[in-house]
Length: 463
Image (cartoon, rainbow, N blue to C red; front, side, top):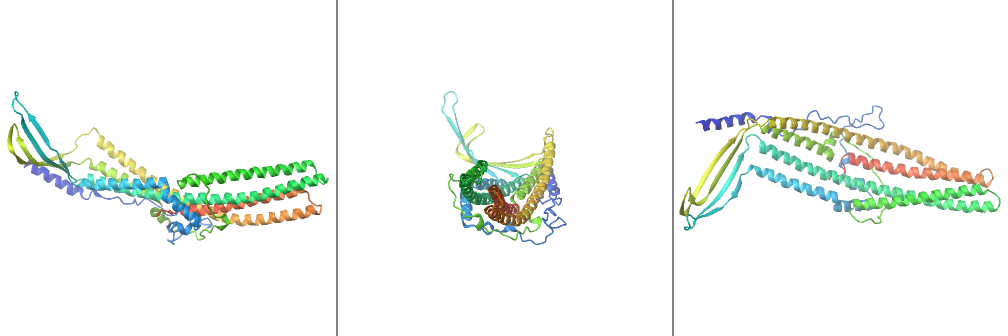
């Protein structure tokens, strides 16, 4: 009668708990806000207000990075990169653990054969054996197994998002390094041409000195300028080699020359659509990872709550034995035994209460980190938009500056021939032109990098 009342009590408690927090699956908190996290780089209201769901981050990376040689390098990187391979293995690990968590609902079954041989006062040995199959099954009335399984599913999803994040980083990392290489190539080309010009200037100045048309001081200054540009060229060539080596590391191969096109051949998307901020919550792998961390903390808190409630285990043993108490009989006889046990925590030195408080605190920390990750994602999008807009405008000024300085060199040379300018003025004009040309290349590169950064900030390359 007492046992019957206990069972009824357990069922009643379980019924009351059916609508309890323990059984509720994770839902995104209503306090999480993604509105207004983009800043418009040109609007006077500062906030990028858009209802257009077209999102650059949803484009396949092949549509963003159109250089055929770059596409080949990205494909090679995706196939060989060690970090991506490790991320894929972690996904498989999490998948196995999820399968194991699902199997926790089933009873565990073990075969445990035993045998004894007993001799009394030197007599014959009495042999007894048991061939039992033991089964144990935990009834999940209070969501302990349920929340463990859900938590493991979250871990599996988190590993998938981590793989997506690694994939996106590899794609955008290879693209950025490739474009940096093209920028350096162009700067090497410009500087090499300048070296040739300065070398000719030195020859001309030496001839003019012999003819008594200039001084040794002017010749020395021209030689110094020539050596300065030559040293700059060597530094750029070193950077080219180092950038090639960095790209090879991303491709998981030994350092070697990289087959590539030129910076002037690059065509980047001009319609930089960012969609609505809410899409960041679904598109960016790092934002999804932060949310899965919150979901995992939520299920950990549920497990801490479930620990306050009783656990019901049913065990059963079935098999054959020829031994019973102190007697041995042959042949063996079939045996069966079942046992139900109930364990209700009463006093655990405050551990259960402390564990629940800690779990709640960790859940709140995860929620705050999730919101912070969203804000940081919005910052990256806003910065990339601003960078592109700034560099696009700067390039217009850079091109006009280069054009004017090129004319200045031509005019100064004409004035020199007429005796109205010195050769040092030509040198100054050429130095200004070189600096402007290098700046134009750098600004063009930063505009391209802004596209790559925006694509990455919007979750591009995750699939």
